[in-house]
Length: 396
Ligand SMILES: *Cc1c(COP(=O)(O)O)cnc(C)c1O
Image (cartoon, rainbow, N blue to C red; front, top):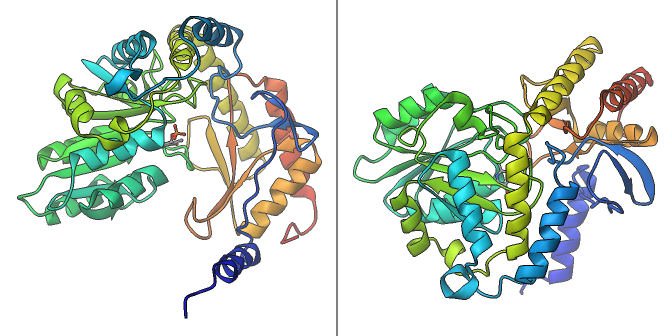
């Protein structure tokens, strides 16, 4: 007899709850920023990815508004039909300039850019090798591609080299890594990964969703940070919904790579272009991110302040110099309890649990933004100290 739909989903939901893995969506009642109202409660938040404080910037809002007046709201069609408008094109040129690459191609989301690049570049008979802590969209893309899928040890060039040895020599091999790991905050060992990859004639793809805007003197991300070129990292993905504060994503690379993606990448071809006014807003935020270096400097100072304070409290920090500063708790129930107790003190820090992170490594994912003040980071540290002082912070 066929399984009953309602019974099956009820079972799976109950199992999630029993394992402290049930997820809920906090309801945000304000724009992004340090001070928010969530589920009706005013809170000081440390969990968005608006690292430079551009998501609610008046100049970006003004660019969006005047963009909408000139270009309307909807993209209207896919890029290849009649949806590729002048603001999209100008944004692609600005992103190519930022990354110092011949061309960039705009996507509606980072998830789609990753699906597009991986599935267009490799398929059956090829290999895709991924860091085991890569973002879900990269892992999904690898599986969907139909290529032989293998994961190497986190940020470990030797492990990558041994996996590359085993890749069938007649197929192509694509190596895929996050630039800054989204749940740990550490930076990929790109020079060594690039060297190993090139030595095997494989291709390196970097998804720098969390590095753009934050790393590099101009905010050009991890590739700029390490001074790597097109032959080290031929496929570079960036997203626009994090440090750039808007939405969308891009792939930057050679003339031929972008031409190829336009021809063959299904998540590029079969979708409506993003609203042109959004591209107008992003053009402004990319300009601010590039030229207002003080945002990166202030952010780096907040990261140092947080780490010094959290280390003094003896909290389980990870080796990260980026604005992603997780505090590892371990057990999912305990991570939820910490998050709830912080919330009781007016602080919002999300607990991240499996399957987003490996089993037994539930954590509070603290993220800092240039929009935060030193006083706000001090408040977070006080809240963490108060949590720690509470007796027996177990499952609640
Ligand atoms: C957020 C994120 C994505 C997805 O980007 P969206 O534009 O939000 O779809 C892809 N890769 C990484 C590493 C990310 O952190």
